[in-house]
Length: 136
Image (cartoon, rainbow, N blue to C red):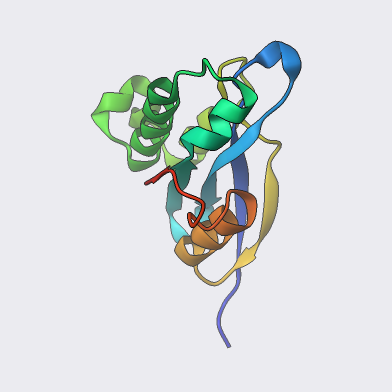
C-alpha cells in the first residue's frame, strides 16, 4: 500500500482590478512537509486575463509567477524569501497581498506523490492548457 502524506496548497489568482474583486485562476503551489516538496505550476492565458481587464500587463503577471517559481526552488533571485526553509517559503507565498497575483485560502489533502498532485490540481483549477496560453 502506498503511503499517503498530508499536503497543503494554494491556488494562485490573477486579480487585474482589485477594486472589482474578479479573478482568474492561473496557478497552484503545493507544499508537502513530509516529502520535502514545494513547487508551483502555472498557466498564464492572455485571452482569459484580458477578458477581465483589456489593459492587464500580462508580462508582469508572468514575471510574478516566475518569482513564485524562484521562491519554491530557493533560487537566489527571490532574495530573502529563498533563504529560509520550505515551510517558511510556503508561508510567504500563501500570505494574502493586494497585488495582481493573489493566493487563495490554504487547502489540504493527502497524496502519495505531491508532484503528480500539483499537476492534477493545476488541471482542475486552471485548466488543461488546451485553451491556449503560456504554461510553465
